[in-house]
Image (cartoon, rainbow, N blue to C red; front, side, top):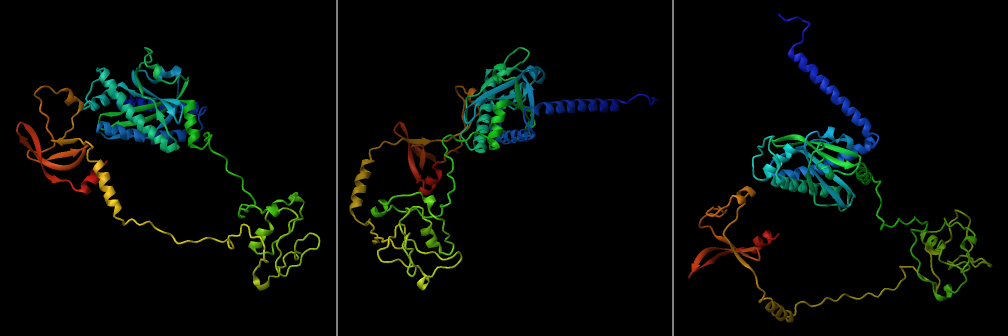
Length: 451
């Protein structure tokens, strides 16, 4: 019988798990406090959203390459200092870096575990993804991983172009084994002392359940965040918007006649300010027209007395409507109507359409068609197609048989300039193969197959 002073194995394990969780939470809290000195909480959320969208596209590209379901989780944004890389990556990893050559300026590095890289390479080479820890990455595996990362970063750059509404181009990726203890692969990382680390949990089918990390320089991360939040630099070729004018709604005035153009111009600010609130909109526009030089009398309306000195019509008191005979303004004979679209004379002529019914075009079309009859076209008879993995291609030898997607006796395809136009059956003419046309592909089918 055990004493109550002793702990059971389950209780010991629970205490150990609790201690480990406390240490992890403490380290995460310390990391959060450190990243707060470089990025604000809003900037951290914005950077995480950028990574979430871009890596969503990258995961789709990886799923297409591997033929497996790829899931990623919400990213976690922390910082890593260069002198702490040995603690962050105690074991060898695979580092892939790309440089942004257009749209942004910076280096983006992806770091994955060597075991995960081996699984990805084996899947791309046609394997089942079953690798052991003792296996090492050879040149073929490294090339396969590099191609996978190239596809992922290309999809990521495309998503960034959509997010930031600008063209984003990257350089070809560089890949190396990152071994901090031996000093290998450090050249694939940005030359900064502090990195922003964006970590994702990644699952590839039942084979990979790991973490993929993105290392960014702090300046590059801030550059993306500023562009996303609207604080990025504006286009140097863009022109500032014109200032609003008080006369924006007034119609553009036409050039003045010679009589008015020769009149001496004076300072408009010296004119007495007169209110025209009692006028209709048409007369307000004419009265407030700044194009008329000072001293040029406005055209008076019928029934409006003229001022004996200034030549301007006498204005009624504020708020009193002007007397308009017949309720509408009238122009005296010989009055200038520049800018008045109502009284402008317009020359209206009936439209004349060209006659396309003539018979002269038929002969011209035949002549032009005859010019095309001597153009050579490439005719190909296709027995069938198939898809093979790289492993199957490398295993081909003399005597190997490749099975096609055509059944025995099924019509073969006849292509002209790689476009399907007919189907037929293979025949033998003397000592040569030939094809007898059995069916012509309809125009609708041909249009549907055009890519």
